[in-house]
Length: 278
Image 1: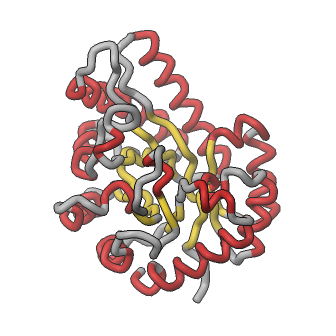
Image 2 (image 1 turned 120 degrees about the vertical axis):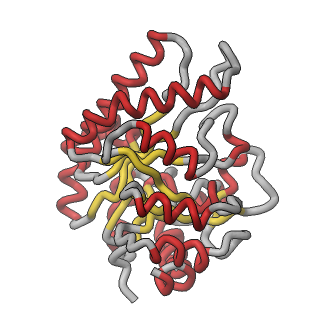
C-alpha cells in the first residue's frame, strides 16, 4: 500500500515546528502536505516552497481564504484584497487550490441571508484572479453549528450554488468529512460537484464525542468516532476524483502526540479505512 495520495494538513500537527512537521511527513512515507498561511507569514513563501521542493513534497492545498461576510464596505474590500494575496501565495507554493471558509454572521446586522449573498459576491469577485493565477477556490461548507462564527455555508449544495453563480470554472468545493458526514443529500451533492467539474479537494477526519469545549477541536483520527469513511470515500471515488486525500485534524490530544506517532497513526488509519476504497 503506497501513500501516494495521502496528504497531511499542517494544522494536524500545529504544535510542531513546520520544519519538523515536513521532515516527519517525509520520514513517514507521506508525499503531500496541506499548508497554512500562518507558516507563510512566518517563513515567507519562497522559503517554504524551497523547503517542500527540497523534500520532494507536493502541496495539496493552502488554508485559508474566505471570511467574506462583513457588512461594512471597508471590511469587504480588505477581505477581497487579502484573498487575492492568498491566491498568489497558493500559486507560489504550487498548491492547486485555496480553501475558503465563508465567514460567520456579521453581528452588525445578524442577517444570515445577506451574509450568504456577500459570500457569493466575494467569490465571484476573486475568481478571475484565481483563474489568472492557475489556482482553484475550494469553498468549504462547515457543520451548521459553526454558522454564527465561521461559516454561513453549511452544505455542499449551498457551496455549489455559490460556485456556479460565480460563472468561473475556478470556483468549487472541498468535501470535508467532519463537516458534511451528517448531510442526507451527501451522495447526490458529491455527484453534483463532480459533474460540474467543481470537486477540488477531499479532506478526512473523524467526528468525536463528547464534543470538546471548542467543538472545532473534536476532529479525530479516522476510526475514533462516528464517520463511515469507506462509504464516503466510495462516493468520492465513484466520481473519478484522483486528487490527494488530506487528513485535517484539530484535536488537543493529537497535538500532544509526538509528531512521528501522529504521522504513523494517520498513515495506518488511512491505509485501513480510506485507501482501499479509492
